[in-house]
Amino acid sequence: MNRRDMLKAAGSAAAITILGGVPLDMSGKRNEANVRSKDRKKILVIGGHPDDPETAAGGTMCLLTDAGHEVVSVYLTRGEAGIKGKSHAEAATIREAEAKAACKVTGARPLFLSQIDGSTEINKERYQEMREMLEREKPDVVITHWPIDGHRDHAVCGILVLDAWKRLGRCFDLYYFEVMTGSQTQMFHPTDFVDITTTRDRKHKACYCHESQSLQGVMEDWHIPMERFRGIECRCRFAEAFVRHVEPASVV
Image (cartoon, rainbow, N blue to C red):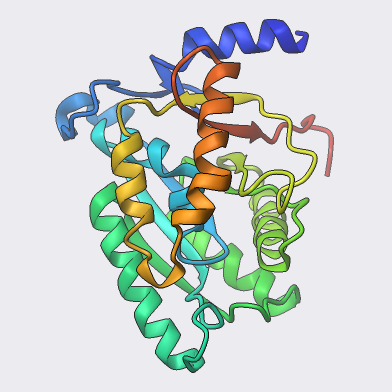
């Protein structure tokens, strides 16, 4: 399928299902009865810092919880280095509270891992931590950072998730999101689009729960233009874009 055909398919499919066929109700109204219990999925959205899941996939998260699916917002760090003039402990307390407030808007359950903002690591212990978390949570779908990213913490997050996906036998569908494409995320060519027109306002409300980050400028300069651009690509007003990771079964 060439890119033009892919965009046509994405544009027609986004209003019914997303991310490999997860059923949705596009009304924008939260209702756990929207999906039958056998169709209910568990989706983990894993970001490097508080605010990454919301800015990258907040509209999709709202659509998923509205449809009755279980969504977990996983934060690799607590954003310890993200508030100038605050100690790591002080910043972590503030940003964890902000993340929990954002999750109340999206309907997601917050989950925090133990890495440190700005000092994330890739080693045996960190691979194990990610793998064990995914084994406990048993997701149907995981959405995380595209590993080719100029921000160290974003790249580390994506690499750790990719390794766990392979070691766990590719037992969940793996997708990647984008963050400030061109500045941070690089070489990102979407395979899937989600129309977030009905949940965009709630997404922004969740993003602005991260008050310590003063996101107004970042939203206006990066995320909002990207929502419009991805919407143009899949023929709707506003959209979020993802890359699905697919490998031949023979690849080890």
